[in-house]
Image (cartoon, rainbow, N blue to C red; front, side):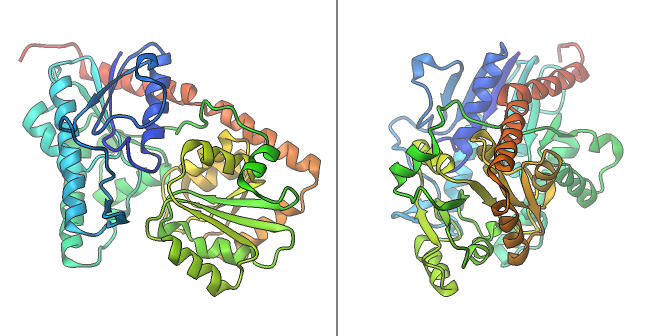
Length: 419
């Protein structure tokens, strides 16, 4: 099968490149011809000559790598300049993907978390309406925050345009829409009032787990990170957004003897200064350590290897699958997570740790205390269940289900006909 994976932001901080690499590698191992279409290429991963897939870059020749979210070394998420840079990068990437895949009727064009305004524009101008000679278009939707009411005139206008474009994408332009959480599909169906036939285009599929790295021992990782070998270490990891409720995690561990919370990840809504201010305000400096920065993969893996459990304290608005859960399971680490969407469902059904009530520091603390009460054998059994789940949800296994979806959509298109 000829598959084009479209992800503009592989060179940026966060999960973007990891998702693209693991997906393309797995689909290639499953004997498919895979092309990754991105803006600035890959910053990591295997050397170019040893890759299993092709990489196409949309950036102009000679453009230096840069993260669209930063200006003069600081994150500027709400400025028009940041918005314009992001939109232009996506437009160039989508246009390149469309131009390369145009006319390839038996190809899959899979857009990862694309802005539907730009995507529908490119589809209408370059690829045209659904027909046998157009590649099958799959669009992934990872979150639904823009379905809610926005603050400020400019953001309200953008959200309105975004919702109209997303509705068109689901109803008309895409052959299939991929989500990783059943509750996310339910919200899309109810918000847009989709009938059963159109709702069937929204497919709930799993997210892959794990990375092809050699996991180091807890002792070695703690030595490199200069952590106390005798403490029980809890980890909050990832881009530091408001919906991750760092305040709940900080409050929950305060006063627990022999315990340490590590907050590690890139600044976003929280910066290093605001995180430290939060810790000082809660009076828990002796229980909390921070590493607020974009962390290379080696250091990221050390943090997961060094900890005893991972805390995922999303607020009740969160929907979708958590990339942090997949990282924790890939390292065999139990989780204490908010019981929201597919995150809480996976933790509860597969017994990966403890799912707790969201938006509650006391509930999170209770989950931490339950973990601390486990004996050595109980912890070992818990880690075995987590590792078994990671094997079940490996990238190869989950991408086989993606391939089933691709085949179904190709079959629904019917035989190629001249137009």
